Length: 488
Ligand SMILES: [Zn+2]
Image (cartoon, rainbow, N blue to C red; front, side):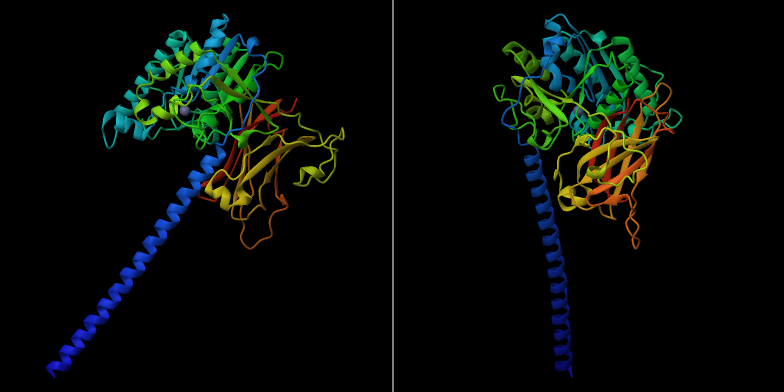
């Protein structure tokens, strides 16, 4: 009896341990699977980042640099002004021109940067604000070293990482954005261009417009719409909209610069003799790149200026020093006039089928790089290739060309911001996924069509359009940060 019991106990123990082993083995397999998927995703991301930063072999000189006499540099954070334009600033000043620099944010929302600077696991509100104040001082020091006096350095003091929400959702002063870092809805900094401004899109646009009206620049330098950093593309969008409000005759030239994109600039590090070249992916028919070649003393001076952003050097030193090169790079947009369509035609999503009044072929308003990220790689229906625009009567048509067939599981969204004298307003059009229904007629082949009412927007002379694709309540797949649409 005892023996039988003992055997059955041991049998039960053996069975249980086999069960435990199976569970452990299954869990192990799941963990290994997750690690493999993560490793593949990270590997693919790095590879795509490297590919998207691969430079073109050659680039022409930027045209008419000598005609720049009043230069306005718009920088999202305290250091972008020097990285992008430290050489151009010296070039303009040496010729007797004037330079004004606008910092949109004080860079007071860097969790890791503030963590390292203050040696704290959880930086406090005070730490973030102190980081913002010291970054302002670093910009003043760097600009002074390049010959720009403190009175020509303007701090708008909008929240770091907050400019995309201002552009997309927090437009009205009555509904300001609250920074998750400083927990404020208005600038507390002594150095603030307009201390009355709240964190709203309307306020930011008003500040930029009043600076343009006051300084009357002939050239404005701002971030490229394909910059990966959210504050960069959004600061570019606000600047483009502010520039669009200027009279056509006196509208400044808009030059765009790139700071963050995959592994750009390639190669990385302090290599003053290596050329700074744009990524092949961003060389297309809708934006023309040009370089500004710098003499030795400008390069050296730019290098010194970069060393003055002391708070940024411990984490980003090698990246910042990558911009100390013998040239700087700018891209100039040349948006085609938006064609008028023959009235009463059935406007389909395919721009190749649009009939314009003057019979001209419809060319892209903006071209977009492909396969930049893992979500774009695996979701070709969410990967933008180009945007097209046309108008007929009071309607503005925007067609987005995708790399693959539009998917019902992806939300397609475009936002129009209007530059008229009174107020900016927006319209958002979605192509929402409706499982079990036929796709809406707005999609055909690889195109998604969106329609806007110009009458409701007050027939503006120009608009700025931003588009994105995302999985509903999920991550963004691709984005066209902004594009200018000239309607006059
Ligand atoms: Zn930046």
